[in-house]
Image 1 (cartoon, rainbow, N blue to C red):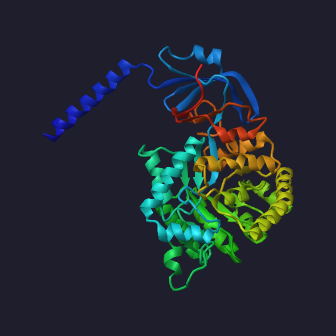
Image 2 (spheres, rainbow, N blue to C red; image 1 turned 60 degrees about the vertical axis):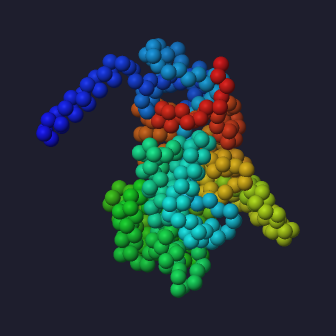
Image 3 (spheres, rainbow, N blue to C red; image 1 turned 180 degrees about the vertical axis):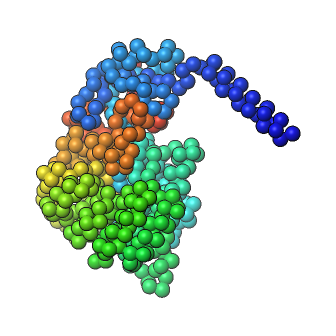
Length: 447
């Protein structure tokens, strides 16, 4: 009887497949039209552009007349009028499962670990993921503060179609020195709390075991905290981490802000350094020579941090003065850092490091503030866009899938009404979002 049932099932499946082919010879074909398309690699526009999409992939790109001549008659046509289309945006430094209402990291982490269940954190992540996607971020790299495996579960739920959100690379728990990062706890209870967010490393053997544990839980990359409150991952531990991760063809991203942490990362051959605040010219040169990416995280440059805090609470005069003093210092340091990055030739990407609940903004809207911040810090619009598309895709190892509007890649496409090569803050107001050939958002007026 089981063989007969199996045979009947196969016949029904075959009939359904043939029936579907007969009913629609060109299933899920879309022709996307716009006034111009940005070639992010060249930094130039294709005027009167067309994109032919078959299923979830791009089939053809070029002038609309040529592309339209190759489209089947029953293709769905989406005319975006005078809009500019460009690849879906990529945030290389996201924290989707955290939403702080305090500027103090300790309070945010403790609230996430002790004040929320793992289920609640994943649901928060689903909420933030949807808002990120609606803002134009079709891919993100989640680099910690996600509980034990919350970001992995969120990634899998999106991939299976249970939830709507961007493509995710998940890091699971961060590897960190004993005590974790930004936590100062009672030693009697510290491990139970720290272990919810971090894998504590003390020695090369523990470092290797931590990498294996993250991979067991499904991590796409390994995130390491190289320096935390005068505690460091040692050079030997960092080398063990990188060797173990690379053995499994897994990339290593490292939070490193000090010269000591940055040097240990460079010597070990990590894949990206996050933040890199105190990197010397020699270290930037070494990063370029080794092919190590620098993920720039300057979301709050130019007074944006004070603006956000003032929306959260009334600031006493003393704190206002302190923030203004910080802004004056930052106004000198960060632009100089950006110029040294450009001079060094190191490959750089854009990461938001957004983990706040920003009053009056969705998570995605808050994340887009990084574009204006990077512009104010001295980057040209084309460089900001590449750092958020083609170069970001290369860092993720997804350059054959996303990061440009090219045949064979996923149809991850966004549109704005203005000219982002003139004003990159146009990316703060994305009007159209497509992920994998499916329209997620379209607020453009149709002709």
